[in-house]
Each structure stands twice: as structure tokens, then as C-alpha cells.
Image (cartoon, rainbow over all chains, first blue to last red; front, side, top):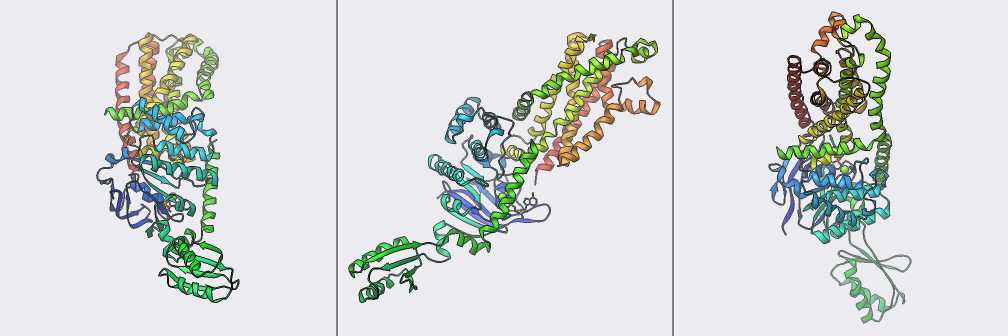
Length: 339
Length: 261
Ligand SMILES: Nc1ncnc2c1ncn2[C@@H]1O[C@H](COP(=O)(O)OP(=O)(O)O)[C@@H](O)[C@H]1O
Ligand SMILES: [Mg+2]
């Protein structure tokens, strides 16, 4: 696979001396959606800002599409798109004016800007509102416009810093859909940061969990969940404590991925597997059929990404949510101050 | 170079869209000189009746004397607030967006300056029209008026450069406003914009002489009252141009420094 992003031993120390990113290395393949998942202050935004050339790395080597961006920052700017954590829309301009200006900042010809704005606004369902002043827009619309702007020059690599921060669940899902389509239609490489589990889980091909400037682990969401413990299959049989059930369980135990079987007080068997449980379930079925036992119900429980997050950062999401609330409050305050 | 100018233009264009959108502000721009010229002119008319005062002012009509002062005052305030929008851009993240785009970094402060120059020129044009309606006679005619606009724009450029430097160093709006006010008022009152130097006490006249506001006022006043007195216009213009270059360079330097981390 060709590499779209290659980061080698990146360290960023701010002027004040705070180490925001500490010896981070990772690669993102072309066409991949790669996510940075981590609590506030983990260094997610800092990493993005270094990658798009807003900040200089203190140490480390960075390549976007094979170009060393520290040495040739101007070569890469036409190929990267960026939607910041805080939506940066000039709310005294209309939707179209905002996006046209962005087109000019990326040196596109006027005709092309016109055509592409139309396309991209339609894609984000903003076309009907194109002539409205953006101070009439909701948070979700502003975010959509912000991402739309980042696409006007058809970047090869798109950086989204917490693309759904502070949005309600429906808007969030809508934005996920847009992001998925982007990758699908344009074969874009997408690097996003988030501290929403569901988001990382739903969107990312691979996730890096980052905490206090260090990457704790990188893997697919599936494998991450696997890492901290296998799936659990709970089964209950129609016949209780007869020989056939015992025989079935013996056979199930022989499946190589099955780690242990225990019986809980409600006569339900818990089968812990060290791989994806959904692949084991059919086997359990066929074994029980052969032994003429009837399965009453069967359920698959997976460790959630939340468990993974807790495992690697030592924090629960509730704590993060509180931080997030504060963040949104200050954002609302900022907007109010402006009027 | 061509790219720098184009990039600057789009940065300026954004400010101009917003400028023309603010109806009340546009209204104020027309209303202000109307009030100044109408009210002040009427109040001060008595003054030029006294031959002493008329001699000191060098005009028979106080408005002739005051119009250049008003022009300068307008571009002074316009220019100094022009650069401040960069603070707002920083606050809402727009500055970051500009910096992430491939536009030339220097185009950002330059664009802000260009937009305040254009706004300044428009305001000056309005003042000239209104003053003419009030009977102010511009001795050098339309070419003179155009040169007045150019001088005003160049002066505006100095101030926007100054405010860009300030806003690169100071990041909060409130502090900056305080500093701006601290500079603008004294700049105005220690110049010959409102009173001729001949009636000032010696110490004030000394300050007024080196105050750049006086330079611009002198040039504009000559064009308004006397005609093409190049001996007074050219030196003023020269010094203003030098200050322009100095402030452009400093503001570029300050901006580059503040946006690299
Ligand atoms: N401009 C800055 N100057 C100094 N420290 C900063 C600056 N921006 C961020 N930091 C610090 O760097 C760390 C990482 O911040 P950030 O990258 O914004 O985290 P995240 O995006 O994961 O929430 C935090 O401890 C933060 O306080
Ligand atoms: Mg962040």
C-alpha cells in the first residue's frame, strides 16, 4: 500500500515548554480513514497542525504523499484540506461568499470555483441556503460548510479535527455519512481526530489511541477490542443438564479459539473466545445440531471501544464528556460575545 | 509577486464585502462629514469674520481650512482600525484557515491594508463631495481631488501598518482598543488638522511640525486652498512614502514572527 501520511518520531514542544506530542510515529495508507482517539489535551490537534504546516515540529520527520513537508511546505498545501476543531466560518459572509473566497485562496479559476461550490454544497445539503448569511446557520450547518470548504480544491488528504464536536447525535451521523461518501467517491485519505468512541468505531479503518502526547496503540477497531479480551457468547439450551448438552460443550471446548466455558446461575453458559465471536457461532450451531441439542437463545457480547479506551488511557468517557461540555459552553460564550 | 497581489486582493475583498454590507456603518460614513461640516462650519463661521483669525487660518471660509483636517481624521481612524480585524480572525480561527491555505503569508497583512486604503479612499471621496456641496472650493480641481485621495490612502497605509504591528503583539481586543485610543487622539490634537500651527504655543507647534498627521494635512490643505504648491506637497509625500515602506516592512516582520511556531 502506498503511504499518504508518514510520521516518524514526531515531537512537538510549545514555546512555554509543554510537550504536546511526544515521539509519535505512524503511517496512513492512501484511501484510508485513520483516526486519532484520545482525551482532551492528548495532542491530537497539535499533530494535525504540524502535519498541515501550521506548526513546526520540534523533532521528527513528516511526509505527505512522499513529500517532506518541513522542507517543502508550499508543495503540499494544494493537496491537503483542513477543517479545524473550531469551525472557522466568517459569519458575516454568506455561505457562497465563504466558499468562493476559500476557492480563491487555493488559486482556483473563477469558473471552476463556481462549479465546484455548487457540487460540494449540494453534497452537503447546503445548496438551498447558499445565499444566506452564515450567522443564521446552526452549529451542524456551520460544520458542514467548514468541511465543504476544505474540499473545494479536491485535496488528496483531508484533515478533520474533531469533526462532530458538540453536535447532536443525528447531525453527527449525517456528517459520518458525508465522510464515508467522500472516501468512497474520491478515494481520499482522511485523517480525523475524535474523542467519541462511536465515531472512531463507525468511521475509522484504523485507530491510534493517543494520551498525553504518546500513541498507546494502533490497530483496527476490531483488533483493538480483541486486544483487551475476547468476545463472550452466551448460550442457553432447551434441555438442561442432560448428557447431550455436556457432549456438545465438550466439542465446543475443542474449538481452538474457545478459551473457557462457565455456567452462570441462570443456567446460561458463557463461552469466552479469543477471536471474533461471530465466526464461532455457526460452529456452535452445527455442533449442537450434530449432538441433537436445541439452542434456546444465543447472544454475542463484544468488548466495546469504551473498554479499550479505558484500558489505555485510564479514564472513562464520562470524565471526558464533562470537559467537552465546558468546551462547548465557552464556544457558545464566544459567539455571544461577538454579537 | 503577481500571486502576492492576487492573494492580497482576495483577503481585502473579504473585508470589502463586509464593509459594504454594513448599512448603518455606511450611513454613518455619510452622516459624519455632514454633521462635522454642517455644524462645525456654522459654529466657526463667526471666527473667520475676524480678520486676525482669517489670517491665521489663511482662508476666508473656515470649512476650507477644516475639510483637510476631517479627511485626515477619517483615514486616521479608518486605518488604525483596519488592522485590528486580524485579531478577530485569530479568535474565530479564520487566520488559521488562511495560514493553512497556499496563499502567501504576507498577503494577509497586506490585504488588510489594501482594504482599509480602499475604504479610506471612498470615505474621502464622500467627504470631498459633501464639502463641495457646502461650498468648499478645491483649487486644484479634479486632479487635485484625486491626489488628495492618494495622499489620504498612503497615510491610511501607515496607520494600518501600525495597527497590524500592534495586533501581532497584543492579542486581546480590549487592551488593543485602549492602546489605539491612547495614540489616535493625541496624534490628532498635536497636529495642524484642527488649528493652524501659528496659533499654537511653541512646544505644541514643535510637536505638530514632526507629527506625520501634519505632513499629510499640509499637503492636502495646499491642494485645497492654494493649488499645486509642489514645494510643500512633495516633501510631505516623500516622507509619507518612506513611512509607508517602513511600516509595511515592520508589519510584515511582526506578522511573520507571530504566526510561526
Ligand atoms: N498554543 C499552545 N501553546 C502552548 N501549549 C499548547 C498550545 N496548544 C496546545 N497546547 C497544549 O498541548 C497539549 C495538547 O493540546 P492539543 O493538541 O490541543 O490536544 P487535543 O487536540 O488532543 O485536545 C495540551 O496540554 C495543551 O495545553
Ligand atoms: Mg483538539
